[in-house]
Length: 313
Image (cartoon, rainbow, N blue to C red; front, side):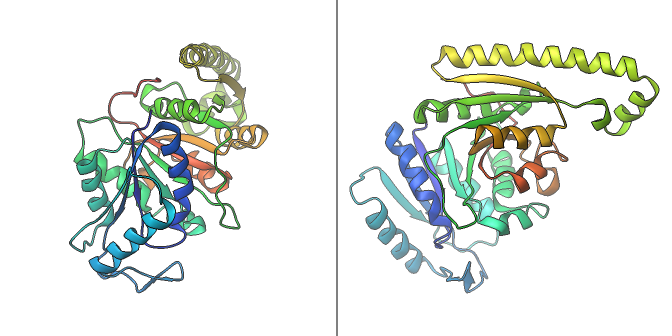
């Protein structure tokens, strides 16, 4: 189970919307929580319509008051302010991840601004990239990216976890973290694999399909069968640990399949494997993942692909 949660906070009400999520997860597993604020050099005076924390004293006062207000009876909540302003917030947070050794980071997606930043490299992506560089030999720390709804509300606890899978081990690092959440929250999870139809193939695969349609269809049919076997193995392993898990394979465009399945299952948490690289190279499917991030009404568990897989239990 998750034993230590790290919450980067920038002093805004938007960022604080992750607190009920972190508090619920901590209560479910008796986890510690560390709130951390990094003072940003040459930061704007306002962020998200609120005064921005500019110095160590104001940041310390903010976190002290926040702990008293949001965690009045919890002795397992600490807070920390980095004592020197930095021009690279992601790098500083990576150093604090190294220092505090959490097993889950909890952050707010900051609504529409996060989506606009996804191609230039948002903080979550930059943080994962910095953690990979700083902690290359350790199991990567997943990031729970909480997405408020259009009214700014965060629904918690989560009710259903969707895990898109493509059969590649390096893209399935999120299974362990997702299983831990499913066990803690006692909610079901669905493993989903999409095998594209012939008319959805891209690039060289599309050209091959045009010249060899029957052979291509046979290859896709075999891929569908293999995907079903692959999911069956994972579902059985998850069920043996007590997770309510199931699997589904569909012949559909991958992004559209994930979005349709999320809507059907009312999935409010989607697990995405990421290579923890920077900017547009950050996620394992450059074509699929941005569509899911932009269009799915859900929070996301971003799991770096490097390192050894986490165990299910």
